[in-house]
Image (cartoon, rainbow, N blue to C red; front, side):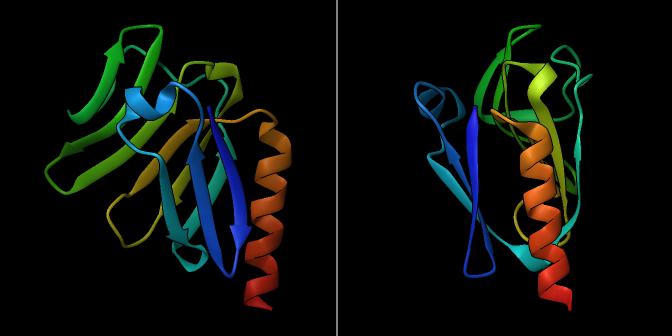
Length: 121
């Protein structure tokens, strides 16, 4: 699970607990301007993950954590509870997509969308 906060036009994704070791990352800092879409994704599959794991953890059906890459594509995963998953699409930077689970997906999606709207106005 991750915790997402917004500070100074940055989306801060903090990996929680043991998942720091499984994902091999403690946090990601993403410019809010890079976020093109955010949505709840409660049906995300923990079976078919695109790309090679570099580094991270993959236990089919249980957890996907870490960086997954293929030519022209890179995603960060930290999902063990698919019902709480969100997807954040990005433009530019190291990742094209973040797929993570959070405690309150609807709240996080709303909070990020509001921050993006404020930034654009």
